[in-house]
Image (cartoon, rainbow, N blue to C red; front, side, top):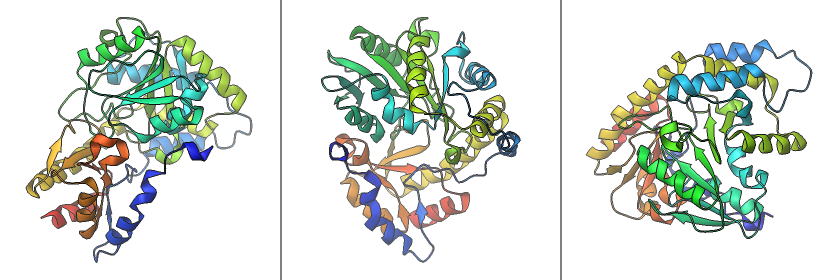
Length: 360
């Protein structure tokens, strides 16, 4: 089975990582979006509050969790009219992304459409079930035979935000060929220079959730990467189908993590505080990159800076590594990323300051 999967991208960074770690001041790892800030106490307390419960948790999640999802999406993102029944907690977002084509019953002969520059796991998920992957240029409709279309705004890796009308057009194009739309909205809370919207908004979907899924993660907004905390919601019929398969497969979010998710979604204050931390890092790293001769494209939202100086991406990775900074080549995300690198905002303030000093 592994023969049909691509090589794991970050394995190819090993040599550059070794060089970056040899820097006298230590490595500044900006290659992966791994949170470094503490888990908020309110979430830690919620996790511990049910640590003594011995029984199996419910695959569908507690009623409190599902209500918390509905409330948070309405308060934070203007999503209204969502049914709590159509909410399903997931073991982080990556497992849902990887297994969604399989959970939907896709296989050989089916097509999964992904953005030209995309989170690598979209392709992995299609390959796991034997489906064909097509990469769509901006505004390009999916071909006939497409069963699943991935959207991602704000984008990983580029930080690009799709305008509302473009998002609505992409939804309409997918529906025209009978495809399910999966919108990866993991960075929706991290807006800087543009205002991203969810596909669950009526202005995008025309008042119908038919064929729509929104995928969310708490890894970035609540620093819960270690908890593996996420959820999917949207079309009640599609979510019900996912729930049925996941029940049989034992794909269940642990009960303490369900309590943590609920607490995180009920509290907006820590989300605003975490966004402010990332914003401060962006405010010093962005001008430092520009002063060092880089252009930063898109990056109007999300957790990354999409930078280039017009050379091969791996040459840029090597340039950073010699300065003790590790970044990811744009080729990890698609062939058209061959002259860009992705730079994360997730290092601690002291490490970001070290990067700025080295860039100068």
